[in-house]
Image 1: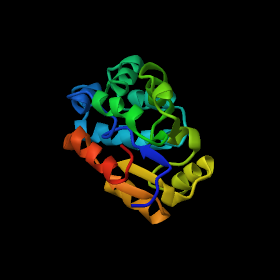
Image 2 (image 1 turned 180 degrees about the horizontal axis):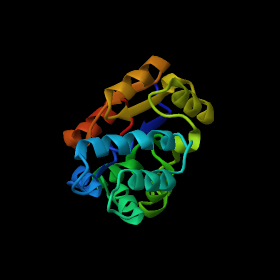
Image 3 (image 1 turned 120 degrees about the vertical axis):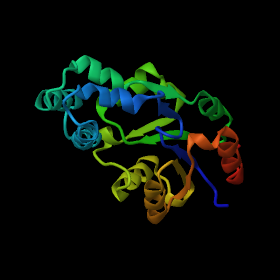
Image 4 (image 1 turned 30 degrees about the vertical axis):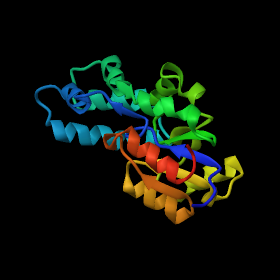
Length: 200
């Protein structure tokens, strides 16, 4: 195995997940007259520019709720986006890892602020690489280039773990060591993966 100087962990699906029934809660914002799947598609499409910091999510979401005639308030809608369940067993592993551990995630500013401040990720990780603060998103190669440049590290010395194969493949293409992992696989599977790279 190559020498790893820094571990990069994705957020959703790796160190946290939405609370049970989150997608239904989000769909419930549409009210009775709007098609739920159509509503969700509009929501996720509207969020994309915010993931790279190109738009203000509360403004975008508020306008969208009005446009789609949602009966939900902006406050109620924003609250759904912060219904996050940290994977405490994964977070408890962080002090045992032999190299710096950074969060590498696509997020819009409202949700990122909640993760940093309310969930305390700013104190639990050595660095946070959040797309809306970087101006680029996974799986764009510029995202991984920015991390390597910031860390002044060769890509091959970075191990990136994500639950989406598209992001894993993009990281490998750029030269990072990258592995797919999802919380559903269980914490022992993550520990085994880290042990293979000599990080535990």
